[in-house]
Length: 273
Ligand code: DGL
Image (cartoon, rainbow, N blue to C red; front, side, top):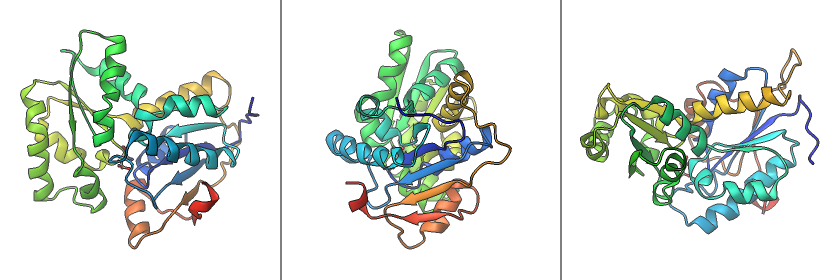
């Protein structure tokens, strides 16, 4: 068993910078835990790729974090969580938390009428990851899923309140609203940035579930239960690794994290292959 020390960091990875929304949640729930983040910005997006490619990349991404001596891994990417979690758990000897189970559980505790909507990338929706997870515990639930691929570039463009985004949101979400859902899972790293527009499109009576926030509470419970919470008064600075730094990168990344990012390092893809 990989040696786990309380003061070791939590590893978090994503296909790109979207997972910083999950780091933001972890920073809020667990302010003393230090994070090592890996974002595969050279190969993003994963959401439109085949399962086998996503699995291959996910193994490399998690392998990189393992070399940083992480005490656990949080798979911030919903696409990776949908297709690669079992393979990752088989291969790596640390606890691995994904987005699907925490998001599904949070939705089940929120819904009253058991009619739940799920939005995500083509891959997450195509694999029916959330439906399968929800139906495992409540067979009578009715799940309505919709891929919303255009939300990713809109969030990165910062069009969080733009008329174009509102039109696209209405177009994507009107079917779900007609199904009388009372709960909607934001099953993609980027969607929390668009939550106001999404809420407006589905109406205030629908409760939005942020899988990243739900996962942060699972991580907290897990570390607490195993006496692995960092009890040093000081935490080490979070570290951020990416495989490419395109133009505007820092600006967009800081919007997702909600604060300045002082320690970003670019690594070569050859280092993880
Ligand atoms: N991080 C991805 C997810 O949560 C969205 C971006 C991508 O397609 O890679 O599914």
